[in-house]
Amino acid sequence: MKKMIGSPGTMSGLILRLGQCATSATSIGVMVSAPGFSSYTAFCFLVASMGLQMIWSFGLACLDVYAIRRKSDLQSPILLSLFTVGDWVTALLSLAAACSSAGVTVLFVKDTEFCKQQPALSCDRFQISVGFAFLNWFLAAISSHTMFWILI
Image (cartoon, rainbow, N blue to C red; front, top):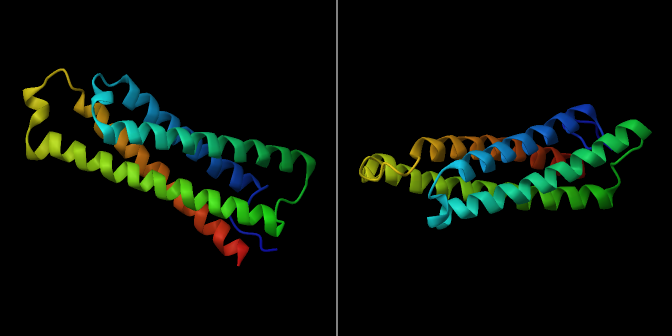
């Protein structure tokens, strides 16, 4: 099988997974700390999507640690197919959640100036959380493309 940056069972793959886990956890933490986020469906979808991404990335990071310590190969076709499908699903969910939350945030901050009318909303936290969600999607896209190229 091919060796690429971000391959499962390598140090670069572990760093990529830990980055995904950290950015999704940060996005969740910032969004949950913002008062009133649960009143908007897009923000709840962002939290749910980032939660799924965090669980998936943490699980694969643990698998990478195990493979690195045992010096085992995680590049069997069945495992790579599973990783590829899981990465594509979580990457698409992350992109959808980040885009929908970004749309609501832009609507609140720029278009309607809803944030100025409702000082109880923490629009700065919404923006930070969406930024981390897009960073998470970028890392997930790298991972999913790496898995795809290793598979073919």
